[in-house]
Image (cartoon, rainbow, N blue to C red; front, top):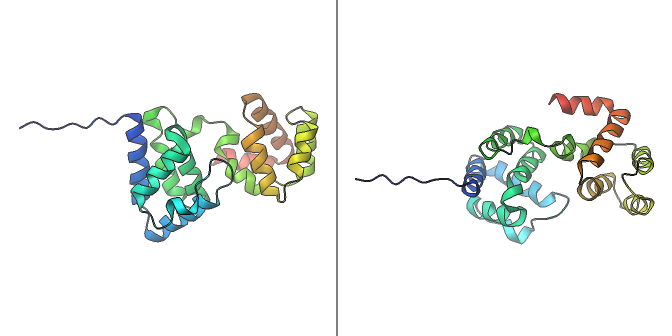
Amino acid sequence: MKTKVTVLTPKKLQNYSLKKCLQSLSSDEFQDFISELLDREGEPRVYKNQVEGKGVTEVTNVMVNVFSERNVLSVAVEVLRGANLGGFADQLGKSFCPLGKNIKKKHFVERFSRELIQEVTFMDALFKALLNKGVITPERDGNIKALPTRRKKLSALLCDDLQDEDKKNIFLSVLKEQHPDLVSSLERS
């Protein structure tokens, strides 16, 4: 009798990890996850008709298709944290290790983007410093400031303007000057 051995490729491992994590959520926790997934700012987005009334397998497939195999686990961790399901986020984050994508290796700005969007204040001083340091242009500064809420402004900045390591480092240094307690608290977490 031969035993069939299944080899998990990186893609299959990501799908399996996400699916197992979502299966371990209670029904209410799964609904909280879906709600947070739909409320997630930035692109790409998941829309209500893609996940409404769907089960774990379908939601997993939608997330992989929308966010790509490369990004799906980091997005899932972000959404779990946003839904106050940090324990599940930590557990899923550990599954990054076999793929060489441990969440701790990401830049501070990427690891804590959701927290930064929620907690950073004093927007005028922040954007003035970023403008003076060349992270954003005057035109971009005006476009971001025209957005209706503080969260939308920060989300636009983090998603669109901080794509390279140098800009992330400058942003982090400005944060350390303007929000030292927040940065310190996040670094300890």
